[in-house]
Image (cartoon, rainbow, N blue to C red; front, top):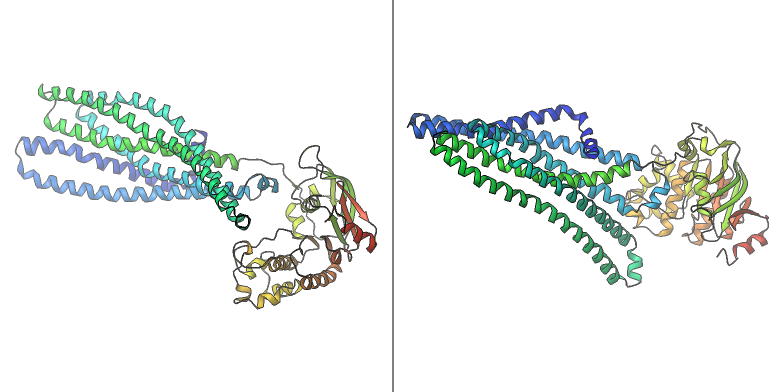
Length: 566
């Protein structure tokens, strides 16, 4: 009920259209029931009393009623679906607005396939439930109420007998409802697993093919499909069994009621017209009631999906860098004091380290794979928080600085390059949306990217493909470097940002960095001596500690050639 109330809460902002949909749906029910009442007059007066002059007016009245009914059906459908679609869009929007601000740890925990499943599969199920509830639920409810009212007017006793079936149907629906909700939730979870494995396989298609693992991938995917199929069939079993049981209860009861009704006509307690009207109203009411029961199963599946979405939306994380201090300009230094960090308790990645990086300095960081170099960058960027100890920017504790303010002063190029499926121009301008073409070209020249861009068929308007798949690794790296340079930040962090560059490109980037380093603070993580030896100072992460290497080319070369580094 809490989940359902929360979904309904989204409709409040659209209450005017919701009221209009309710009015048109209720009028639709009234115009559906009207012919069943009028037919009593047709049978008793036209056929019973031979008043044939009333036949044409009755026919015209029926045609008019169905014309109005069609119009009301259209209006109720339009208004209800408008509200339903807006509600689902609002839920999808709120989910995105919430998770986009979740910390990096959330995205390390959740696969992109799982997240896509929430946005597509789960919210589609909510959409289907909303559409079903709107299309069949609300209108069918008013339709059934009006028809049963006509039945009650024609024969209260028979109508009461019809209503005695209600408790048996309600008990059946309640018992089956829990089962439907659980099976629906299980099937949605398994659909999330399928989305996850598909995303994983498409991203890793090169590895699959290089190891001739197509058959293994097919087998693994078949197992996931089999598990999903099993959960779907259990859900179908629960959904199909409910109306079947209700059909048995309803039809068996109607047989008994028909016998009692026949005795009523024979005894003269009701007329043939009343009996015809009663049974027509009852039979017509059965269909909307049946649709309402089907809506119930759809709503159960929607609630199961909504609970998964709201569970994700309601996650809470410790607020990082929640301070209100805004850095107008980086002026002095970045200082780490007794810094400790670990992803897993008692397994430190950085241990009791203290260093200070002064404005205008260029710092090289080396270390074995997995030593914590990228973690060091993530800590400065505020992606993660220290387990203990502190980081200071210009003597302000990082946790007291606005995260937006912090990142405005840092340009970051990671070892995993990422480009949007858009033009080169749009990808570079992502760092500075109001940048001029001249500024973008200047940044690309500094990143040694302008030449290859100019040689592309569409130049800066070239679409790069999903994550830059239409470009080489070196080209992608140069574009991400250009993007960081366009931002013109005061601090630049390069995390293996030149690993895919050839010697010529790397030399050009090195010369550009030398110029940048005269006015910027640069932190460079690299295994390449040509880049590190030009740094003002070099640190190595060894045994979880940041250790400064003496400014000596021989000692630096020795460390870089160490087996633990390479």
